[in-house]
Image 1 (tube, rainbow, N blue to C red):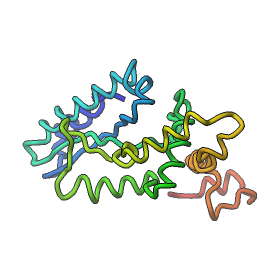
Image 2 (cartoon, rainbow, N blue to C red; image 1 turned 135 degrees about the vertical axis):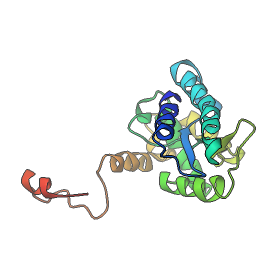
Image 3 (tube, one colour; image 1 turned 180 degrees about the horizontal axis):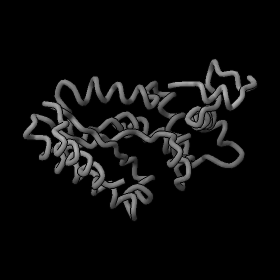
Length: 200
């Protein structure tokens, strides 16, 4: 979660003479709205994020002699194998997805990365006052935050599927684990020998 591994990777590449001219290195982070700060800004996660953001400056200095640069990119809340187990995350993200879809600004992880590379990183990086690339700007827009604050407090065990985007949340989680993918026949018979012959 912190920046130590990132710095070690860059050091290893430099020592192996494997850094391309003008290389850029990106680490991903999350800040989120105030409702998530107790989880994401205090305790171990918070300390790790501070370390990661500070490491971006150190890695940036390491890459400077090569004409390169390094940044921490702050992304929006995403359904991941880890995030679904963070307390309060599920109610927040089903409210967020509902709000962003209603307002026409929802992005899949791939769409968010395309926007990062097309609009925020190249040709010149667009950063805030802390040298962070903010790809969470849709999530933290006043319109989205206001809509989330209307939805989330009203979620109950009886209505979360109607008020929030639970189905979208569930589909992302299932697809992340290889299920509910279009075009896949989950009833097809197979043998381990057949699987062993498959190549990426």
